[in-house]
Length: 83
Image (cartoon, rainbow, N blue to C red; front, side):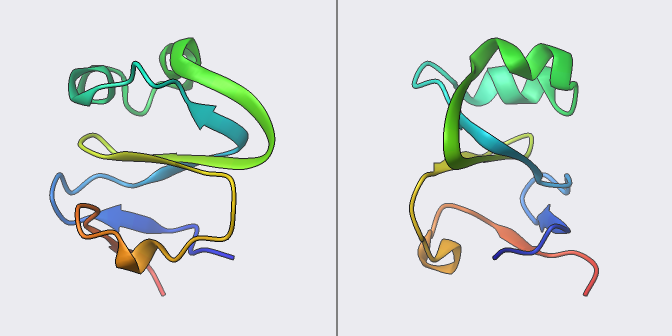
């Protein structure tokens, strides 16, 4: 389980999550900066993968396909936004 109200302290953007998707390896900072939070634009680099989850804000992104502790990710600056 993860918080569904994550917020990035680096870009002050809400973290979007997409069930059953991962990000394409060609994703980069400018892709997210220019396309967040427009799902229709983001789909261009989303790959369907059952059981996975893709996360992104305007400055960071991560694909998860196994149990992972996101708090150990030093580069991610995501915190609970509402609880």
